[in-house]
Image 1 (cartoon, protein in one colour):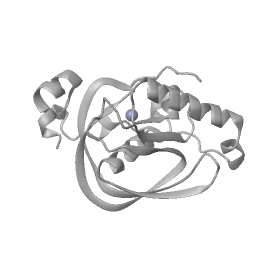
Image 2: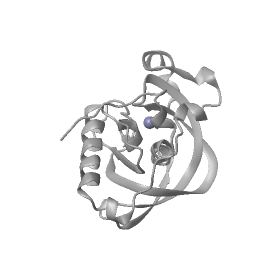
Image 3: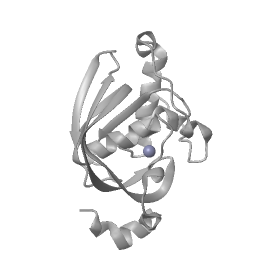
Image 4: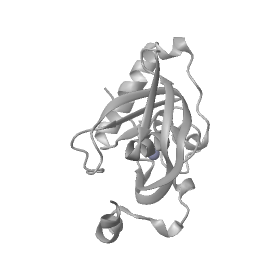
Length: 180
Ligand code: ZN
């Protein structure tokens, strides 16, 4: 078990396209250790998702899962933990939906981002098996945010109006009621 340092916006690894894993690599002890480190780091930071590049590892591995008692995202539904490797996204409904997003690599800020409202994600799990998920609502946003990390994109890149980027405290004080 190891909590890793989360790298922040400005670190070049966050801007790289991460490497996909071979089947052999997926089943390797290194990948199991990486997933455990991601899990430990995500729990320590109270995140609902984390991607390997965020701990400085440029590989296409991400975790998404909302614990029952998330303090950072109290309105998010509890979601089982997914290990997402080598993902491919299909947009099933491009109608934009907006949420206030935050990111462990952009600490202390929230920003309003619109993304397609329904997606399909095809990926491999930690056993190397193909999985496919259809996601809507906030779940669709969380997956798109995490998968963006595997392709060098941060949520701030997708903010259309820079007035809708702000510090977490000011967000809570002045804008939280707009979240619903
Ligand atoms: Zn993030």
